[in-house]
Length: 94
Ligand SMILES: [Zn+2]
Ligand SMILES: [Zn+2]
Ligand SMILES: [Zn+2]
Image 1 (cartoon, rainbow, N blue to C red):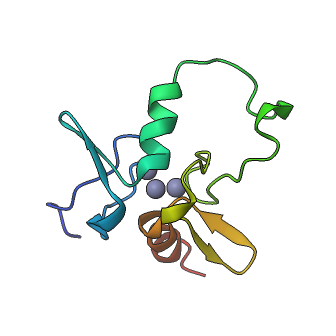
Image 2: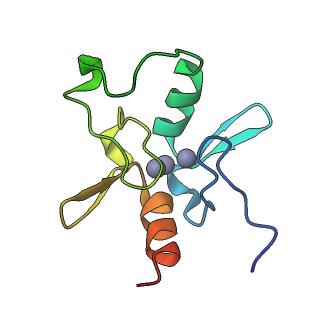
Image 3: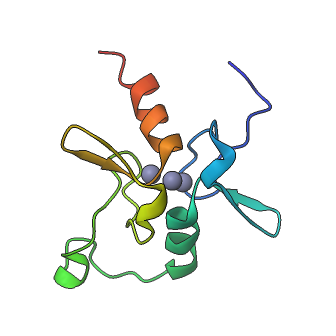
């Protein structure tokens, strides 16, 4: 395991593709979607509620994809960014 890879402060995905990463102070996020999710944070509302009905969510970390510029799709799954897509690919061994 590589230990010096940065990890997203929201979803803990290893940031293997820094192109989409966002730095907020001393926190690093895999992409703007996770940074946004963190800023929205603390709203204890039901994630199943209809408010986000039209928003895509990341198949790996579940954050809402508000910035589609970093979005990645694989088949019928959407990921907030390349980092989550790769994290999914490496964790789901089979
Ligand atoms: Zn993230
Ligand atoms: Zn991401
Ligand atoms: Zn994600």
